[in-house]
Length: 311
Image (cartoon, rainbow, N blue to C red; front, side, top):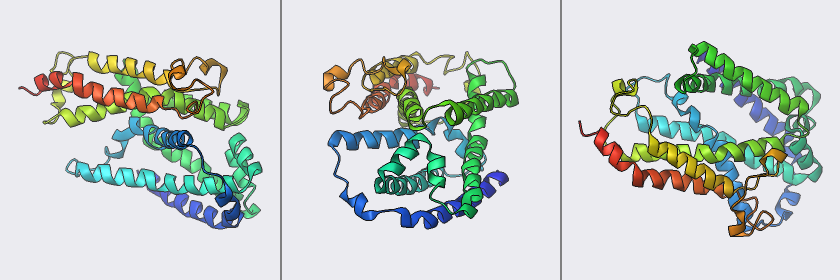
């Protein structure tokens, strides 16, 4: 975690420097001249932000607290994590939108190659610090999240040691990055297709987790979590059923044309105007998935939890 602190400090300073060096590239007249979007477009943008900034990180939530003392307040962990994880992305998204809105050429270039397009705005002497920010940002995220992703492989039954599991996940991430950087025709299309496709089941899963926390009146019995015959059992059929149902419904209400093999999604869009209608790209399926996971578990899971907390 000492390395993580250094990475955070360096990237913050370099990011602020980038904002200062590119501020004159923002054409505020052009930005404010952009016409207001539709309600569906606004909701779609909000859902995209929820998926990319929020849901994209919930599977690594444990990493934000595992280095802290056990007596650290849960409210403090939650509050500071949300504040730290949302403040910087919100500022950068707003600033990036202002840059993109200033020039259609720049906006198109960012969609194709964000790092390459953004470097063209910089003086030559800042290219190395900017590359450092891009690399350290990825390294920092990997350091933080590989623990949880490796632990996930082990928890689903892959018989390997934890370092091997982390190495497997790191390799997958490496090949994914190589594909995006050197083989994909553009960046935005596979990135958005990835977020939409995985955002739906992750939304269901995270909503079920939140509902479980809301329903419980007592802490988990830690010993039983590691015993198949314990009070929690090996499988939670209600949760699994809700993930399946929520994913089916959610994928039915998203339109994913960013890759040919994803065109099957959106099979329920006819109910709200079709794949070419006003709501075609709002991705409301993510919201439906959240609602199914949360309220479905509140309704169907309370009896199971009450039984578990009886002893």
